Image (cartoon, rainbow, N blue to C red; front, top):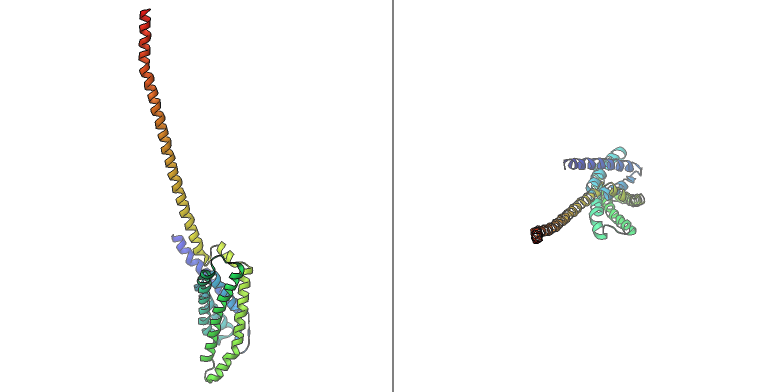
Length: 260
């Protein structure tokens, strides 16, 4: 128990750190368009959410985007921290909890791809809305609201394009590389609890089967003992009968010899 309790936080920290680095690396793959910076960092946020759930996706998305924006476009760094963290958390909740309840645990491939796309689209829309609101409310100090709104409208198509590209890439990577099956095989991320449940169930099943076998063995042993007891009783009766018959036989023989 102590070993497993120690192993889980270590694995969680390792996976979250790895995905944070990947979000940072993918965010660095982008283009500075002057009014903003478009990239494919959302791809790894969606993948993290699908594989490991909302908390790792939130941490990796927020920290990865923050570090990348500090490196390439500092004005949006603080905003990216919160926007991408919310995006990762929402994507994780939708992909891990909401979608399986709607489509089941073992849907067809097409249904799963469409479901993942819808979940990522919703989370991506929140990201787009977050950057749009940021541009309108906080961007360009001293500018009039109309100027900030026009700037946000200019940036909006690029954010939508970023979301769409990341959505397509994440679904291609998840399904073509079959990452969900790999994660399930090694029981990492959101599949750790499933693997634990299966293990516990198998242990309980083995225990029940063992108890059943033990009960059968005891019943068979009792049957054998009863059978042996019957045999011993019969033997004893036969032996007693023989013993009772022996004196009479001897006596009869003595009487005949006397007569002779």
